[in-house]
Length: 96
Image 1 (cartoon, one colour):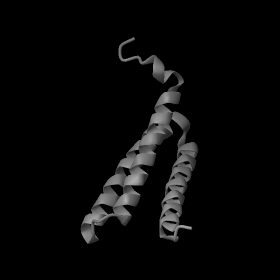
Image 2 (image 1 turned 180 degrees about the vertical axis):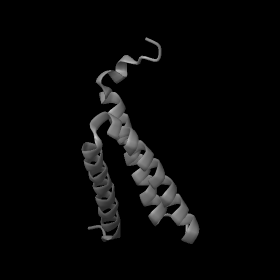
Image 3 (image 1 turned 135 degrees about the vertical axis):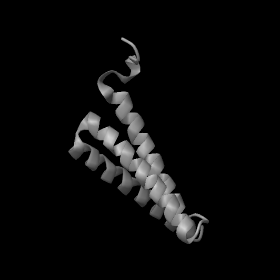
Image 4 (image 1 turned 30 degrees about the vertical axis):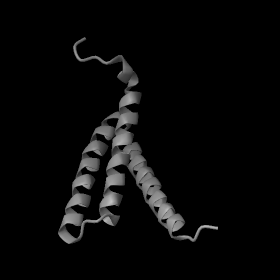
């Protein structure tokens, strides 16, 4: 079969790859939010990565269904957001 990749059998590897890509887009959004860009440039960076995450989510839904894809998006976003807040808090605490 042309284009067949055994590593993607069952879609599991593709699902994992899409999850990693979505997580990377969310991380890039967070960096855009807290990075050096200001105003419109910051908004454009965040919007760009959000659109890419949305496209990846649509592909993910084709493998796992829309409900599971939405649950995955929420979970990944929550993980990324909480990690960013945790990192910010730990870096602002004086070292003992």
